[in-house]
Length: 192
Image (tube, rainbow, N blue to C red; front, side):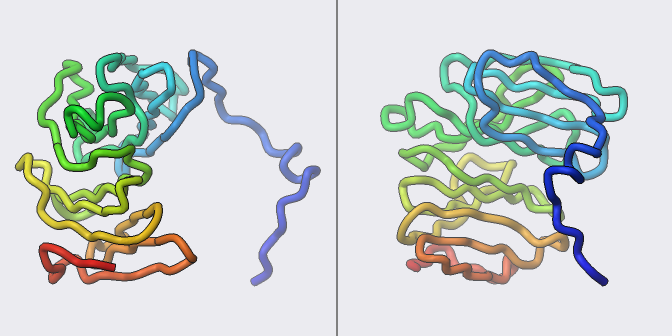
């Protein structure tokens, strides 16, 4: 099987399915729901927008001026998201929020990171999620409790991801290292 390389001609021949241009700032993050035909975005204008991608329509816009919006990801429920804050991190440590898109309500704050979250990922099998921050840590959380469930301390800017089965998570670090962990047996604190 050969892999086709995308060149300018090939990209120009592709049709655009939809275009959304209703933003006052750059989009900082976006995520597709795993089972529903939905897309959620976070933007520098402190908005969270929910789109139906089949009908190419904007379903809802919410603004979060107090904390701002940066990284975003869906939970398992199509009207619930996790969003990282852009403002007031050092004073409040309220780095992450569990939000209901249904009624624009914050369901839970997650305190811990004191610098900007740069990576966010929801487990595909349970209520766990991970966040990587410029404070040189990866934190493992559970949607049902406010407290952090595990911390990985490391060097540099982290990126995080779960595999599709939720059995392994990966942490990419400065210098090109990627470390894989068994999500069923991680310890409470690792130093990398």
